[in-house]
Length: 138
Image: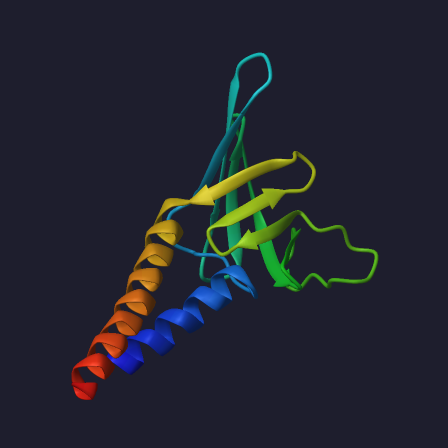
């Protein structure tokens, strides 16, 4: 069990920080900027490839695809990503994205909590392996 926790927790942490290829379709990514007044931004990704936004009170929706740590959006579910396509957002890690056109960073609370759990799994597994190894040597 300790090896399982260590390997799975470490793998999930590596995916989260080094190779983020997904976004959490649970709860929304939120952020804000302060220009003259505070402006709130929110985007929710769904399992079926759709998204909904609320940027400064303006709501929108569409379809999204992820490729090479970038999120592309379209109005149809079968839109194609070409070399001339402009990415809507960049995935910093699985719980943080940056909206390219606005320069706003949005974060997902559920994703942050899951990442902390991954860290606890990996750290707890490693600690358990070290303690077990030191007990066997004595």
